Amino acid sequence: MIKVYMPVQVFSGKDCIENNIPVLEGLGKKALLVTGFSSAVKSGAQEAVIRALESFGAAYKVFNEVEENPAVETCRRAGQEGAAFGADLIIGIGGGSPMDAAKAVSVFAADPGLSESDFYNKKWNGEPLPVILVGTTSGTGSEVTDVSVLTDSSGKKHSIHDPRLFARAAFGDPSFTLSVSQKTTLSTGLDILMHAIESYFSKRADTLSEVYSTAAVRKAFAPLLKAADETLTFEDREALYEASLLAGLAINIGGTVFPHNMGYYLTEQFGVPHGAACAAFLPDLLDHMKNTDKARLDRFYRETGLSEAAMAHLLEKTLPEMHFGMSEEEIDGILPRWESNNSVNNTRGGVSVQEVREILMRRLGS
Ligand code: NAP
Ligand code: ZN
Image: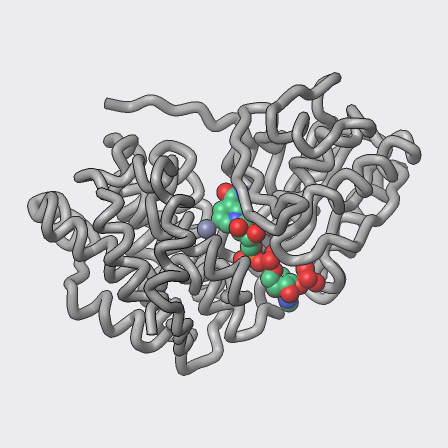
């Protein structure tokens, strides 16, 4: 079966912004640039965007206050600034945090009085402004998904999906990822891998998402392993960027499964970077598949040319040490979070509450 909707015009490769200026020109004349604290400038991406905007006389304003795991409130503030400026276009520049924020900013810019609960309940007035995304990490694939992952006012991360959150265009120039630190390269690289693998083992996986998943794993595996010991070349960075887009296309169809949602908890409570937080649960996902659908797991290894030992070696080289020391009582206290959870329910083979508890005890217990 194949069922797909992905309306984003995607351009990748060196100088893809300056080579496609008419695409930007067609989308707006007054842009709010939504960025993190320094990555947009450090990567060179902001300069490339501004050069393109100036070439056709567009006005712009920069909002450079998007934090990691962005808060809904930050997006609302940016949306209000965009509305006051009269923006007709939102350009998100950065890793997943500024890109996800830009999607939400497009909603708030059209409806600046929107409350947090109405935002999550999609009671949006007005059509969100058009969005352009310019990635500076290879990881989330947010460029090609209709997902925005934000932190609510109680400190909990949620993903919101809506076709109106798809960008109109996305630009992925791997040169902008050359400035990413080794630690972030490893974590974002693990995010690529997790998107591809989780989508493959999701209930919604189909013929096309499997093609995206296996291609993403094949492309990302070697440069990710290399990043543990060596400096990556432009070609390595390009392979990781393309893998990140492929893995984004895979989750756009299949979605993520339990490691992503459990990973949110590690990020919220212990500050573990997103990709590493999700990958901490990869051994549990592979075990789960071995016990519930070994034929599919074997097919995954065959199609990616990998093995159980290769996966274990990669995690050993790339995952940071993690010890959380939670007590049994504390784990029982957080268990309800996963009792009727979409990502848990989307996992092939079904994951019982008992299995969730065992996984949490193994990963978070003392
Ligand atoms: P990020 O949170 O956007 O950025 C992590 C760090 O890397 C920040 O300190 C950032 O600096 C820095 N950085 C980014 N690009 C850089 C560059 N080129 N050079 C130097 N430093 C750079 O990281 P991310 O892993 O890309 O995004 C994670 C977020 O995306 C999480 O909230 C996650 O839940 C979400 N996510 C979304 C989807 C989706 O489909 N929408 C999928 C998976 C994950 P600045 O602070 O200066 O920006
Ligand atoms: Zn992710």
